[in-house]
Length: 390
Image 1 (tube, rainbow, N blue to C red):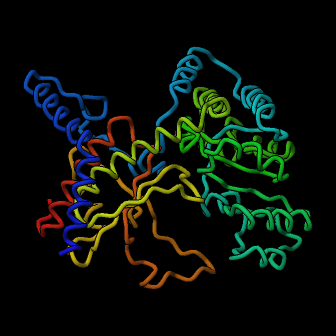
Image 2: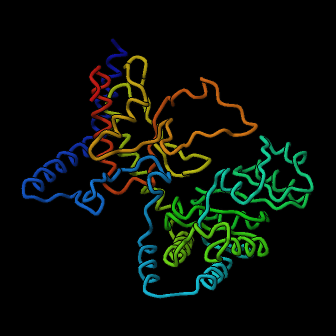
């Protein structure tokens, strides 16, 4: 009985904490019904007119979900760039000079990029795979053209030292490495030969762009193998003048933005969701910032899957079937193409098991959407707890 009393008290406190949000939801529902009654559809847009549903993105800057949304400054710069013709080679070099001033790297090229194995094979290179920094030295020989890595922190520092000792250039792929914006300068101070960020992830620039930074001679070689040079490997991977200017503007915006305030706003959104779903007894939440990619306040939501007979994967699918569609981060990857990775063992069944919690990434949740997500997730989990999943 004391346990039941304590549980009831905790439940009351959680309901009390969520009451302002529940009131907002009630008002929102009344507004939407009134708007529908007079023929106003707030979801009428260029996509819905094609029969394509827009998504409330709580999963993060995944490419299959179109990355991120651009800064307003980026959209304005692209509109201005679209009014003029320009020599693309001169533009690449001009943007490179400007970004060199901003980051401390020798030179920069803005353009399309791909982070995966086949993108390296496309150049004609042969991949030699190693699983730890200690194996790199033994793998280097006279034919080694470059060392490619996605490692960060201490592992990256060790790999950079090995590359320098063997006089082999290193390419760091930190696609989702911004924020923090300090990474733009950090890797230059580490003397990494080449490093790259996606334009359409945390940078919040154009989705079909990226930045490549590093040694001037290597950047010049990359430029010669890129668009607009005819016959170049990357000629088909065209990035227009609008995207080039947009990507530069995104970098400039990040270097002057108040990132502390931005993180506070992101944190507030997932906090609201947490307060709503915690009103369902048995639901646990935690907010953290990942060490790897998607370094934003992220909400973990978990419950007793076995006792409820309702898994994380079940919840992911329920949210995906919602109207509007809600995407969250579970164990699945809808954009993954099955492939054989030489030298890497296939994961065993335990490793392939689904996640024990779902996650909601704050950065891609737009203002106001957290209320929709929190209420929908609250409804689904409340029904699942009662044995009748919504």
